[in-house]
Image (cartoon, rainbow, N blue to C red; front, side, top):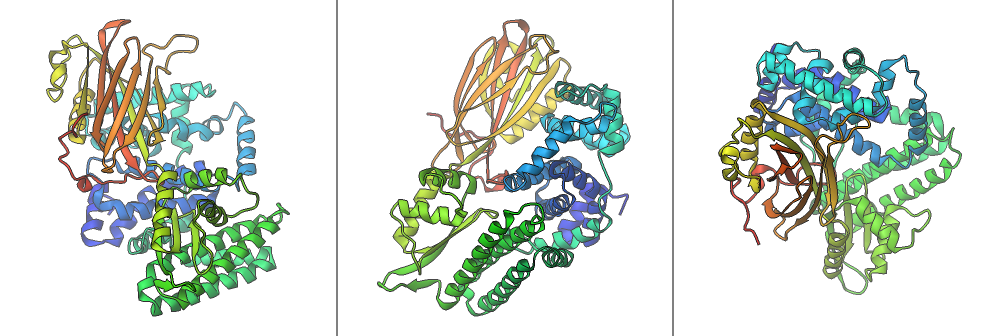
Length: 589
């Protein structure tokens, strides 16, 4: 299927479940995804795990990927975000390794271009706009000729050449600001020769069955391949004898869990979540035992994790002896409820409220925080926090569960992703699309509009095809509901020179009670200050425009797209889940 296009293979997989079509996509892009993950994690084992996770995500999302999306760009972004999440989850454990990597990167000889570029390449790539990033990936990462680049981007070969050149210059400018003293030609050659490395030979063969198997599981369950299980057992046997006993405990817990699932049908979901938590604890124990030769203090951590495994087995046994609804010694009816939360935000608040207790597990901090609020969950009541899957499981009375829900709502505000695009338009000889009434004939000095996703795509396409339009920069930030954040442009000026067109945007997003309407307050500080405060639906775009005093013949346009995202950075609502007409704006007040 080598001659088939990416989207033809995706369509075959979605329609017929074709394993060969999906395997062809894996073979085509496994090197790109693995290399991106490897640059982020600097660990081949973690890079392989990230690569599998990206293709599992592709299998799940295949039916929702638009035919206009460049698949290599989609996979690159997914690999970058997945690797970043993996790195954040392991940040405390890997602090020493990360510091060593940073120090070694500073000592790279200046005559080795790739060693200078590699540590900061993905950071610079992420700062590029989507179109520029796709152009660089197609031309220099995949080594495609300009004709194929143009076909993928939907433009002519000449336009593709111009777009690739512009994207390379912007990448060159970003790398120069970060201390890479190389020309654009040298950067392009280094990326072409080194950016995509060959993934391990067995990785592609293991991804396809893992991804296809994962699509039938719940989002909270991660399957381990037989090779991974053998590798875990080998590490435990080779590093510390005590780990063998812990692994046996984990295996016994899995066996008990399978028996419990067969006997207690109403409790299958709760047991599956506890099984995932047990697997996570066992995997962390494996990592700690592997580091035991270097970190003597790791023995204490191993003992602590053994205690967590024992506690999980106790919880499983208590569930096996009870029902979904149980009664404690004082006649209270207990229920089991699962909450999806932002673990980092919740633990920061709970840890601060308890005065930063030492040597406490996330579950212990959670129980202590609830107790400080008057919710005492003593046996047979219980609470468990799974930080890896962002799940909190509690067994308590209905009033106590409702109180927990209120505390979690206060502790984990919604996350909103803001994408800001800054555009400079020459007013002479340029006419904006008619979708923005107040910009007709370019006679207005400023204005505000709310754009639906469809309207935004129309404007983006029109601007890409017009002369006299300069996309200054694209910046993105994820912030919490109600928190002020700032986005800047004008950073591309030559060293020592004032920015050609500087603008600062202060934004404060707030989510309404309906869960879909975002109240966005934005202030653009440029030569001409412009304010906007509107109600807009999830994934709509606020357009702000003002005339630049230093350039009276130019119009500065700022496009702000606000999207609700979950803790992993994925959209909360798909387009077909939004209960409103996409081309309408909510009532303004």
